Image 1: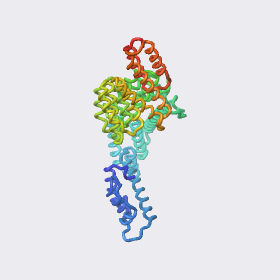
Image 2: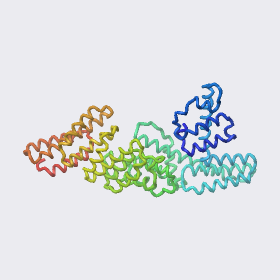
Image 3: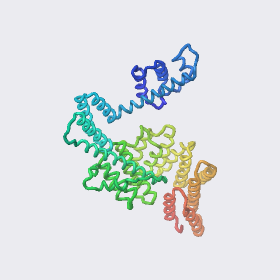
Image 4: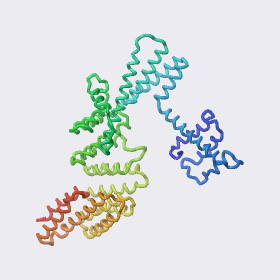
Length: 480
């Protein structure tokens, strides 16, 4: 477990171990300190149970159960440390405990001062989200309790303010959860229930509803309608516009999740045959990079990296794509970094029609063990050879690619069939392109018919590229 802790966290854990207040058991302190000496990797061969026992009970016979008990207590101590760290970061809960303790001791002036300082800190936070309303609820709760403790008998507005803030907190929280339910329901059959969704949306429509002035509430309202109503496009546009206008009022973590909803919608529209949403998805990814929201704990998944490169290249933003790759490839997981980087460089050079350079990058990938990149590399190499007119090399690669597809059991049936159909289609295109000037018009028409048959199948990969290649070939070859 300690391997998951950062160096800073391990240092703090050691400081807590040294505290008699938190850890009175001398043996647990000795065991913990000894173990920390082998951090942060904790992979030394010296880390044995016998060596651990010598640290806590030197000169006595080894007793496995006693060591287990000490290790169990040390693990529980680690859990307590993690809870303390969470409490240290949780301003609301920590301050509530402080104020409660001061009020119980009737230290009203001190309680008032700490409450005012805490409230002032909260007012300086720009985000308008659940945390804001929860903080307001706790503040009004304190003020109400303070009046009760002071035995004041006049009308107390803080009870109503407390209730209103809590309503807003739960409404925003519920909108967030409902939106995620609906989004997941677009991907898998979920069966999630949203019993209060109509009521919440109706409340947001009320002219006197204060949440109408909160951008996050309106964004969720638009997103939910985007996911539940037709036509969905106007709600998508509204959600996007509100999000772009409200960056300061929404935390970075929340903005990232909201951008993801928009990207998912754009991808679904692309899959439904609306190519205009390529630009939409690219624009949102640009926002994510501009706002430094792409990375998750300093890391970027290979699929997000590849999706962004593919979109930017498709939009003709070649310089932007190259700059993105050079900037972010270091954030890829080390095990796949070079493979992903080289493949996407090859893809970029292919799109800019530098086929020779694309092949040089693909050559680096010929020994990769990743099934996806093995297949993608072969497909891109076939396209490069076709564009360069290197038909002999293309036929040889097509033959080995077919064997790979037939024998590889890691591929799904869909992947296998789609790529086999691609191989058949590109071979038919190359056959006509290579022989067009040497064969009769009847032979050209026969080969053209074969191409049409190869392209007119339900399952085939890279169909858009194949159709473009066929269109160009018909323009080149008379009678095709």
